[in-house]
Amino acid sequence: MKVTAFNDLARDRAVAVLLGCCTAAQWAERVADARPFGSIAQLLAVADAALTPADLDAALAGHPRIGDRSASVRSAAEQRGVGDDVVAAFAVANAAYEEQFGRVYLVCASGRSGTELLADLHSRLANDPDTERRTALRELAAINRLRLAAVFA
View 1 (cartoon, one colour):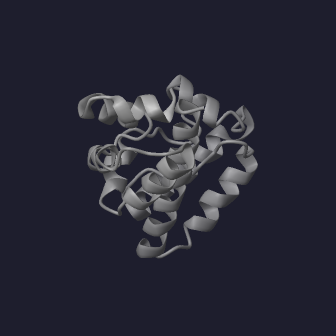
View 2 (spheres, helix red, strand yellow):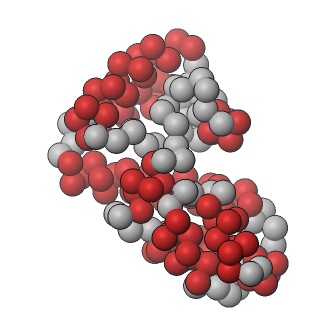
């Protein structure tokens, strides 16, 4: 879709397009309400700025666990670097992360190996809750940028 076509969509359709990238409804509404955009770069900048800590939990509802073989086609493609050799280790590490932070481990997995992602998860277990929330939000912004770029390519 071209940014100009997105600008012309009715608000509810624009929000639906954005929800296809990130399930945080208030974020999608803020981005849709910021139209019109002159470029994809402007849309991505607004999307980053519109993301708040309150959006994280809503967005996580649309993200499977890393290594989850039942993930959606898009999520499976994004985490294709996670091979069978680390799936069992991810199950254990995911459980530890969820017990510690009370939410799913979120990382922009695109282009990263399973070993690299597993090391990242283990290192993030050392974070305090506030640091981890900020880290997860940065990862969500990176995921959103990739997905938005794909929609508006």
